Image (cartoon, rainbow, N blue to C red; front, side):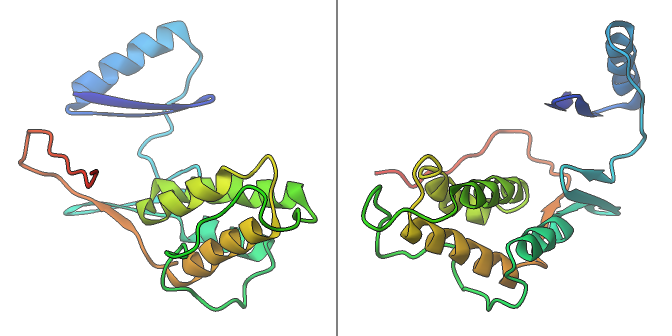
Length: 173
């Protein structure tokens, strides 16, 4: 088994055996100019740390940079990334004064979903309004930043499993 993650001109390759990994690298090298940078330690803002039981994926540094870029370093944290009661509307408030700032912040936050599946829904929801952002959308975006401020130490822990079947869960009606 092998997994390849391709992002623009960067490739992450992992395989069930070293021989398989080397074989794939050899085939790719015959077609493309490439270089093996060794074990993964950093990719797209994700810090990879190995330990005896598996690996930790963390985006604390990237999240902190986003918070600082948004001038929200001193903000208080929120317990949830989205308000559970009101729904965002396409035109219920005034247009946000700096649409490019809104889009930049929303795009940067999307990268945090790699290790933060708990923020995926909230970020996807605010991204729906990137073409016409409103003040209420910016408030929702800031709430995500407040939540991230309180969850900077959250990491994604991946570990080997003896389960060889695909297991899924859905909560759809």
